[in-house]
Length: 141
Image (tube, rainbow, N blue to C red):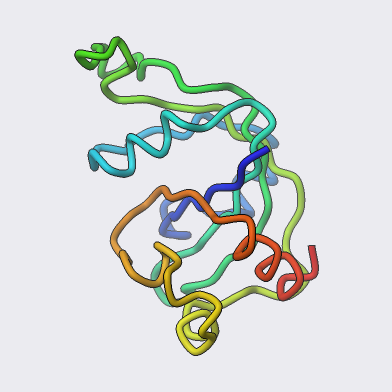
């Protein structure tokens, strides 16, 4: 099982919205690097839900409930036969007990190589196992 971070502006779609909806289709990703990571997601992988904007923190845990497939609003395939604009199903699991802020991660050398710290504009990214473990401890997951 892999873990990923998905970033969202909470005024657009928040973790509270996902909890209310129970499940959603995660779409709207257009950045090539983010799309590559989204296409790597598999059913059962977990997602650290990150709020951008004023919060800048990991606030929840979700699970991939539907693997990558073509966005019905933007059909098409890559030369490799993958969905050009992929979407995944996402199911809410639980809120974190302690939000893990970007400031805290930037101040902690264990996160020095983490994409959330080094590539701030990337909206989808994998979480290395060692970083995942630290985040879960800090978040109370």
